[in-house]
Image 1 (cartoon, chains in turn green, purple):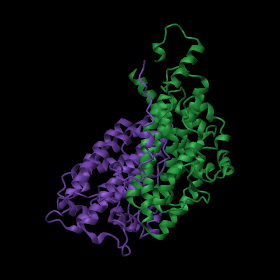
Image 2: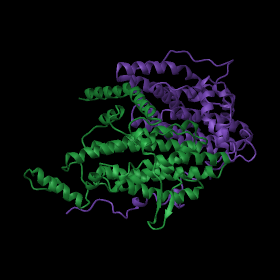
Image 3: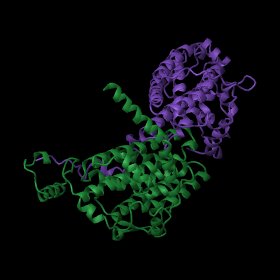
Image 4: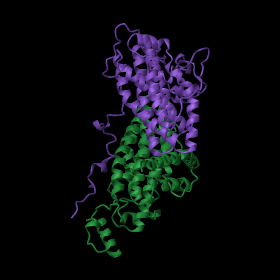
Length: 321
Length: 312
């Protein structure tokens, strides 16, 4: 039932909240015109915007290799992938706009450093193998995080995520396929793949966020149905899924504690360096300054173009009025 | 009661990451090298000189290879997300054309393909793209310029696509099946590129004083390279004579007619800037380029050349 179908007299805040809670409890979706608690709206805007920003910043580490892709086919695949990320950014910003905040405002928040993006993109891409590793591990981890979001309680976000996940899963396969192909190549190529996996494995595990005990927002987000699994649950799932893939690929995951636990029916594994993670979150990671400077420069370089488009549109409206 | 609109836990999306090791049909695109000319009739038409056809295809292929590369440098740098996507799209279309044309060139005359170490798995299109020196590239100089601001990109894409579209409209009649097919597909792509650039050209012309100033600067800077697009190289003359190619001089009127419409809508006069000369009379089609091309190739070819035996 939507608000439009509710009794015509203005319902009390309490009744609205009860209606909202009931919708969440039924696993139904909240839609843009529905009443929602301010905290729910704020959390969603933050989460969706952060996700959109991550897509936009995420264009940089892979974009770094477009001009050096070693075959025309790989160049086409990489260009198309980075283009998809811009597309994801677009529809996530659109989903956020349904909550009453504009893309322009959100981009200002990113540029000014008041909103975050995923710390994984503050790691550098140092060889062409990184393009494959990002597809396999980083997109893989993103999918683990995002698949449950297809069922998130906020309708526009959930629907955007369905499309994002399908494309991410395609990217993951392409990344894995690149690594597979390189492993069939020369010794140098195999070494390049292993070195890349060594660098990205731990940062990929960090993508699920701090351990549950240190994740203050998780409980409320789960209660509201924004989040569907805890950080540690998803991290475990990712590790369990990655181990056989690493074996099939012929690479070693750089974790001496990684082993199958018969009793749990899951893998035991070590912890990433959470201090390094925190440094990245605070802006001190290896590429934070570079990524932000790039985005700021591109945004500022484009200001006169956006102003021209606005001015031209206004003149057109004036002429037709 | 409303229907439950959320997706069920058993939904396919839940298992989106479980199929990585499964080689199913949905994974057909983007895996393994596919011959871009698979299934196309690549026999050389009667009476056509193989070397002429190959060099002609190489010229058109190099135009798109180099132009695509420059436009791809815009990715993550455009003024807005929509333009980032549009420019990547243009780069992708041109890259697709380059692959087909380089593959066509190699198929017509294998002797133009650089020799790689015995056993190198690089396909001919990559040998041509990544293992030639700047002087072996046959692209027009307009394609290779170092990128400027968005006005420069707008004017460059406009000039390039107006010219190439006029060529491709005629190339659809080529006696060579591959060139005719590339042109037929390319016409649709180039029409989009031209419309995208023309829209921005008019927008920037009438937007703000700043945008008009930048547009005019870019237009004056690029116009000197416009006449070169319509020079007839002996290879183009021979290809046209044989019925496989188009003499660019013969599409000048059509191209300028289109350009004049855009200029009129933008309220901008045809530029008076004189054409840029070559070196001892030689220009892009002769393999005589500006300084930045070798730098661009050094970057583009770096990984491929470091691993001539590599599998990608």
